[in-house]
Length: 165
Image (cartoon, rainbow, N blue to C red; front, top):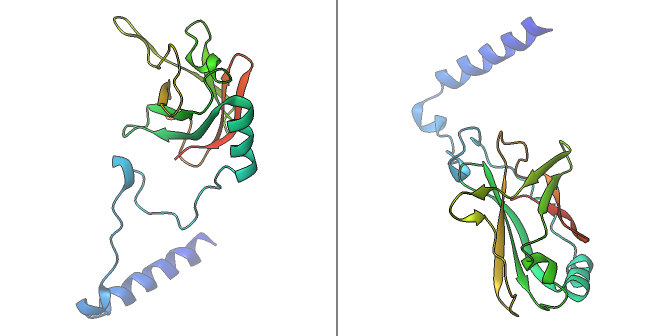
């Protein structure tokens, strides 16, 4: 089986090399986010948060525009959100609560890193309507990848099923 596959590859490569240069044009797709392993773009988009889920989080949790994105290095994940009701979203700005990000694919629990002079890498304090806030989770070892589903857990405040971009 392996020998047949190798033969097919050699035949295809030989046929491509025998073509004139004008017919050999290939489309170059740049790597996204500086990731060395992202040599091709996927034709599939991750499933967005459904409209009814967004309406639920806005009416019950006081937030909308939630997203989780990888940083350029992939070692950090940034959770961003916009506050629509500060009273409902107060746990997000509470310094005494510890936020976690749970990666469903690998069953990992990520924490917000704490810097010596700065403290936790998250915005805390009094929340304001219409203001966008963020918190960063450590993704050391690249355990959570783009396209993975994650849950944000802050005390009794849970946001489930976000897709990492």
